[in-house]
Length: 114
Image 1 (cartoon, rainbow, N blue to C red):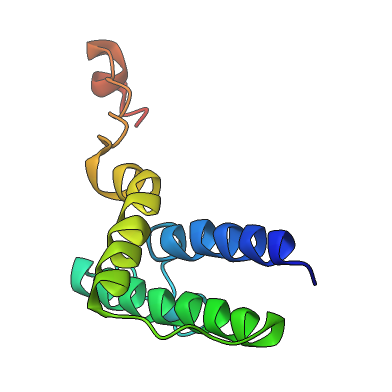
Image 2 (cartoon, one colour):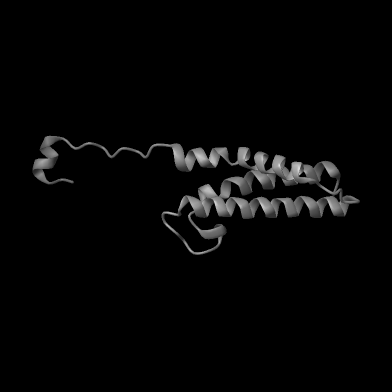
């Protein structure tokens, strides 16, 4: 695998992994279904998936050559990037308003159609 392909692979995996906790009601996508899943569980999943994405990046870097040692700044920057990549899923799950039910007319209420 080339270095360019490895970078693109890690980016695509990071985008998908950052949004998975917000689009799935299952624990870590494969576990039992929790409906509704608490926000704390979503944050824990986000942290776990960030770690797995880092592990994939480190593994690809080691396969391509010598792995560079990283300082704390690298982890802070990748964490902020991962949170930024998670923003579409967060907005979709937490910030959008639920659809309002269609209002019934007085005649439908009187006839018991609902």
